[in-house]
Image 1: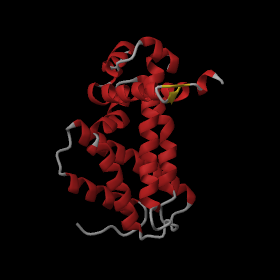
Image 2 (image 1 turned 90 degrees about the horizontal axis):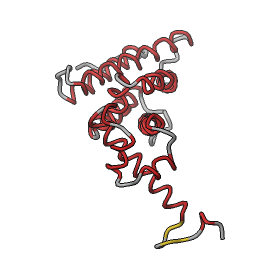
Image 3 (image 1 turned 180 degrees about the horizontal axis):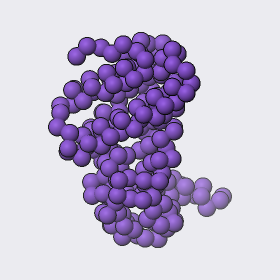
Length: 208
């Protein structure tokens, strides 16, 4: 039997490797999401995960590879949350206001209900060069998701510009909220973002 398939205490080597990788990623999320980029080192992650450096290097080449993996995990979760919000139960046929409210609410829940993820997604890239570059690379993915929700009354050039501007504007809003420089209630933040999305997307915005 291949080594990876042998069991010990009811688990295979492959399962144990996956569990250790998950421990390291969870430790990276905790440290990066609460202490910022400066809190993450190989030693700190291993101490937090209660694993030796041997297991760290079994999974990641260095500290930067770990934080990029943590960041990509949060990016994927945020993208999926937005995608689920605009398609769940409606296959995209719900009225624009409903889709906008669902998407904004889902994103706010992700970054505020678990502030670690909001910090990783929006604040950590402000101070870590590797994350900054990756963040710029991921903007088109979110812009494309927004573009698909825009009114057909806009031509393709307008849709592309509007989607990119919305992603940038909303990112700055949420960054300010998480960073403590924007002092508004959660419900007001959501309502403002929905109005911004609808008015920019070519749909009538709801009255406040």
